[in-house]
Amino acid sequence: MDDILKLQNITMDFGGLRAVDSLNITIKKGEILALIGPNGAGKSTVFNCVAGVYKPTGGEIYFQNKKIAGKKPWNLCEIGLARTFQIVKPFPSKTVLYNVMTASFLKTSSIKIAEKKAIDILKLFDFEDKKNIKAGNLTIADLKRLEIAKAMATEPKLLLLDEVMAGLRPSEVDDMVSIIKKVRDGGVTIFVIEHIMRAIMALSDKITVIQFGKKIAQGLPAEIAKNEQVIKAYLGDDYDLS
Ligand SMILES: Nc1ncnc2c1ncn2[C@@H]1O[C@H](COP(=O)(O)OP(=O)(O)O)[C@@H](O)[C@H]1O
Ligand SMILES: [Mg+2]
Image (cartoon, rainbow, N blue to C red):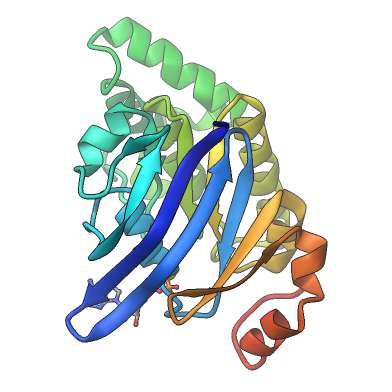
């Protein structure tokens, strides 16, 4: 009903390796759901299955009640499912504005409309002052911001964010948290992978924890923070609990 995304028994095998194992996740419209877990747990693979990079070996994915497993990324983007990449991929010799406009052309062929939409997004992200800077000259924080701005220019209903805060300073993390909240307040549902627990706690409505491709816990941030099994799964891992 109000579910925008539903993963039903998703399994993804790479040869003999089961990266995702019968995973069930449901995201409600307007929700921010965080997917966390140790390195190699299968988080990015889950995103790649949802975004159409991989066709899951088993299970089904529903986006707005339509089956999407195996559909191509560009077709998914057209129907409102956008993602960012852990490794950012801008056109480095082009300006911030050009990069965002390029993404706008998915939904319009008018240069005027594409530019207006791009400028609106840059304003929302307090990024307009950098519109003429070449992407190759941006800081990591601004590259991550550009990555989300590009995704927003495709007018998503659901946005997948893969570690957009990695490598950011604490104040930059706070800025990113407020940008993501603004995006959600604009009506976009958010599925986020993140390592920085402080940001996860500030952002998420719900957290799903996976290990070895399987769900080990799910709940409200406060519940997850005191879940014994979750704490145990992360001991000795590289989680930033500050
Ligand atoms: N394209 C691939 N081919 C083979 N193995 C892969 C591929 N992508 C991921 N894996 C493996 O799947 C497991 C989960 O990886 P990944 O989803 O990247 O984890 P996470 O994002 O949680 O760190 C890892 O063991 C990884 O080596
Ligand atoms: Mg990953």
